[in-house]
Amino acid sequence: MLVRLLSSSHALRTSARLAQGSLQLVTSSALRRGLATSLLGKDYPRDDWTNVTPAITSKLPLRLHTLPDHPLSTLRSLIEQHFADFSHLSSVSPLVTPATNFDELGFAPDHPGRAPTDSYYVNRGLMLRTHTSAHEVEVFRAGHDRWLLTADVYRRDEIDGSHYPVFHQVEGARVWDAGLNGMREVAEDNEARRAALAAENIIIEDVPHVAPTNPAQSTHDPAHAALVAENLKLSLNGMILKLFGHAAGATKAEPLRVRWIEAYFPFTSPSFEVEVFFRGKWLEILGSGVVQQLTLDNAGVPHKIGWAFGLGLERIAMILFSIPDIRLFWSQDPRFLRQFAQGQLTSFQPYSRYPACTKDVSFWVPQGASLHDNDFCDVVRDVAGDMVEDVKKTGRTSLCFRVNYRSMDRCIIVKRGGLVLHSQVVSRLKEQFAVEIR
Ligand code: PHE
Image 1 (spheres, rainbow, N blue to C red):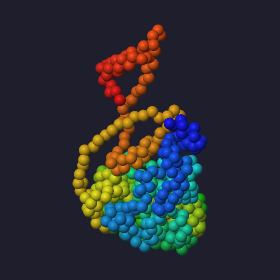
Image 2: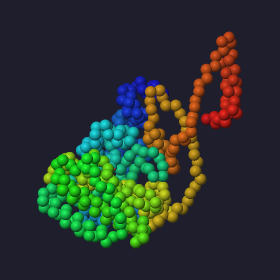
Image 3: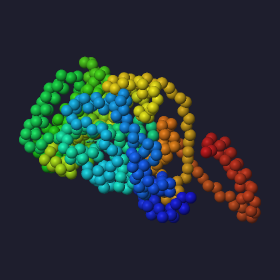
Image 4: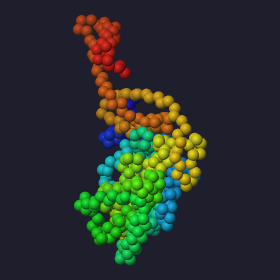
């Protein structure tokens, strides 16, 4: 079957994909099934890059972050309240070009995130955004100086209680005129925010900035870049306090602990990640930094300077609403939905836990091909959807020997004896080594 596929007219394209380490059986069968993928009411041609599955495309219209009373919607509005004077955008289409998602933001041509094993492609020229940063250029171009954008984002991933191929991010950004007036405005804003935070019960660990590995950009005055980075940190510390302050039980005895860590993103420099100490563990909650000038140049506002951040809503909502499994966000069950009211941080009360049923599968991958874990997981999701709690490699050693039975003087061995002898070999293995025959 596979041989026939590979020798068909798709052979070249399929083997090009194999070279990227992914067995694109999905592509081949999709090509055979039909020529267009229907997304948000429009048809898009398929090609050898197509790897979106119906399980994924069915999520596009749902937009959980806009559903009244949904925890993701409450979290979005809490963040919007903190950035009350920002533009709030939440209905931008998830269909973007790879240029928008990657190139315009300075991703290297060989960045692993571009691989079809990691991202969902509608076709070679169109993909599902992998992050809300994909919209930075267009939002800056539209003239917004301070904005939040909330949206669904898509990444191929493993299956477990905290990963889902669709999740939600909030992107936030603020820019100023890079001239002296703009910088005076930043300094004044910093002062006000510093004073407000000083009164709060929060401990902020800021790992000292190591310039050579995480430098200010060459086109920036280092003093201006430092003012902008400080504004970023002050603005986000305030937001984190608002979100986690009472959830984390920040009392005089136990203040909220936040730490800023040096990071790397292609579209910010310097870049930082933020972690919050919650129930005994440091949790990474967002990425951020001073916006790369390339982004602002591409947006037609080269005279601006500013910061941007991106955070994942599910991660934070799981903590704030005590939601134990990421699949629950997609639940239509009133026992889930009825527990939440817009604007309120309530703790989820689990309503059921049914018995699990695990099944193993093992298989040969065709010669010369490889099968990425994400290819397997997408098949499972497409068939079983949210019925699957997790997929794990068993971690056990599996051996397969092929015994070639051939008599030197009789032909009987192959016909009858081979089977008998082989079942004896199998029995002995079980007896002697306690192996489990698959
Ligand atoms: N887009 C990044 C991510 O998805 C987060 C980020 C946004 C980092 C903006 C820096 C600035 O991980």
